[in-house]
Length: 463
Image (cartoon, rainbow, N blue to C red):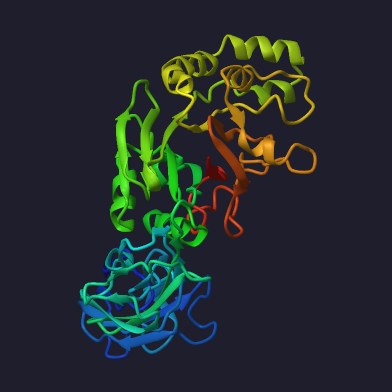
């Protein structure tokens, strides 16, 4: 190596697959047959051929090598003497990272079912916000046209599906298949099913509670994944926690729905109009859902304090009595009692159903036989609330309903996210929702599932 020769990478600063690399060299021993070559890994000049090379005759200069064919990996460039392998200078290791995958513009889902429309009512389903153009794609504008379907459904150029629901509902939902073409050159097809509700039919909303895990900071592409979750799973209402104060409205806008965001991190996204919104306590949100047929449902969501998680103490050898005493003295229990006090008026109005969809940070006394009467859920039950999941699945050993945690296998596996209810409701179905096969932490960025909690979901019939 010559102490008076240098070789350095000039650009780009962080090379990726497909980039060409620009170098600057100097040498006190110029020669018409000096050359710069690039080698992979720990390979030294003389061990196999260089991957890319070029002669450099001058004492100094700049050279750009066509390294666009090099894949992800670590490389070193060498300034070599007189058509041989004597090293005059070399660069530090150069890391070429993978080129980000370019995802073409596309529809969030290939098909979905809307909420029910009353017989004879106007239908309006916006598809435009469901056309996603990922970063790095050329700008373009989607256009929409009807391919097939029921004659009473059509689609405008802006992607809004419209029509008038038949006066007499058929045996199957209405159906329309729409072609989408982007001016940037991509296309897709979306099928929309539109169920029609018979006059006098009782509403059957599906409500889910979801913790957004630091407002989606640990998962890539959360907005699109939330849309896919709502549409693909046929949800009508999402009670959200850890929203960062701004997650509910963008999701509702893309769906054409209604939202209530609070700065304290709780939010509500609803297919149904919202009224009487409130956030009486930190980490809570409440709203009245205006359901079809003039019915109403009062929905609450909350996130209780997660400190001093009780199952950790059990795992560490504390007795059930010690754990129960600690829970009674916890901020979590104080928040639960304050929440129930705030809900007292709603719970007393027996003609209007009430649903609490919340992150309790506590297991249930109705679950595993730990001999701990977990004070938070005991207090909820004493207030007149019913545990929807345990009502539908009374055997905890057969149906644990675990929500904590699908991506943390080393944690105590418990049902700490729950949906509880009071008033004229019937539980049609209750389940813990997780889609796909999410990878455990820390490899969660690519997960399709947008949380570190499973989501309790319940379909109710409003009586």
